[in-house]
Image (cartoon, rainbow, N blue to C red):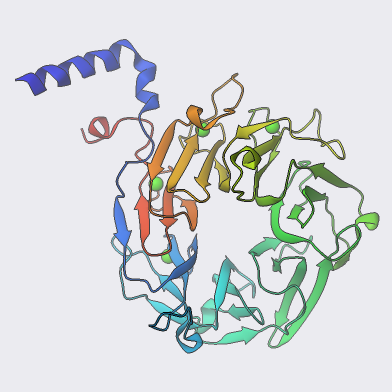
Length: 395
Ligand SMILES: [Ca+2]
Ligand SMILES: [Ca+2]
Ligand SMILES: [Ca+2]
Ligand SMILES: [Ca+2]
């Protein structure tokens, strides 16, 4: 009886204050599904690698040798592909790619046959696996300095072919064992890392953003006319000044003016005052001032960041997996309101083991981005519940 009354009351409130429905949590507090049992899942990405239109999970996995010392059995490390079947991901993996010490991965159609392929950045030569070979053969790219690190697949020149970057190294696969490679050089040394691609100035040409060992974000504006890219040869090169070392980088429109903005998280620091998510809002009509300091930011928080429209209201939102903590925070952008500046303003917070890596992808094709999280032991999936409360959707 009491329950019924409560349900009736909440329904009434829901009708009376219609907008409150839009503030229902995007993600459930407990995971919708888990994928346990993957040996030491290190990196995680989501992409449709078997070409059936449904996103699959790509997990790099290491195997630790039992005993008190930290040792790994290199012969057993793998990149595991979990194809989505009946809306779920299950052990064992559908494909096991033998790669020594795999780090990050990126999917793209590198051989232009319409089938997704995969590149893996290990400690050592970069490996390419082709969909048409069912990912059975690893094509090894000659090991050149700058290998390893965060992998990015992107169409960087007007040919519109997928190339890939690991750190500053730009690689182009020409077929068989033929490769081209080049560099995005830093202004004074070859120290770029962790590339992000975005069309910052909205001219239809991809631009690249890099972190480096300096507390800056470097913006390389395309077009890139050859594969040895020096900053002085670019039509436009801009450096943004961060308050400290940058650990994670993202691009998205956080003030709803249609212009992509740059978001950088400080790398983790024991000193809370040094933890910060910095936001550089893009100027009107387009561009960032060289050496610009952040326009705004979120204090006391750092970690992996993803910018995407999570509640599908047309405005980009920010997700931060708090480094050194067990929380993932969602900050929703609100129309005509300044973006959040403190953790307290988070619209939702998920509590999860440790923060290794997470991705957003619409796993079930309902148009809402779902969250896939790796805590270094278990993969957890949080299905986006959409803007309406769950009990409303069930009817
Ligand atoms: Ca698939
Ligand atoms: Ca903007
Ligand atoms: Ca939004
Ligand atoms: Ca979804």
